[in-house]
Length: 128
Image 1: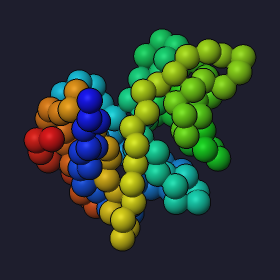
Image 2: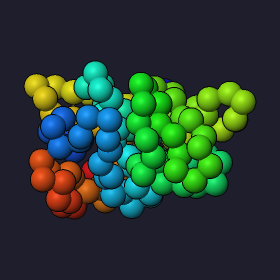
Image 3: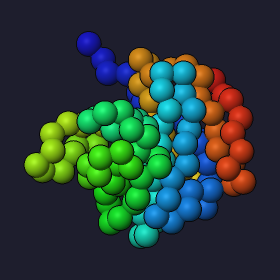
């Protein structure tokens, strides 16, 4: 049995994501939120809180966490895990930054239509 190679898709320039902010990447299986920390780390989570499904992209980014706007759950951006005492996990996507460009990794099960975010925040559709 061989493991398939990850599929890396260019999604935007790092500067298209505001510091301590987010950009939403439309995907056929559900939106993906791209988060940029103050230290320029970029993380990607399914844009759905594990508690009640709130849009994490509308939350407040602080450190390497985001606070859900619905019920103030804190989600660790590195793991997607809710911070104690809360329990749950948002799906996480591997991110790679190369020369200031952001790439997301998708496996074969995630292939589908995905939007690309340009520097102005406009969205265009690309196939993965």
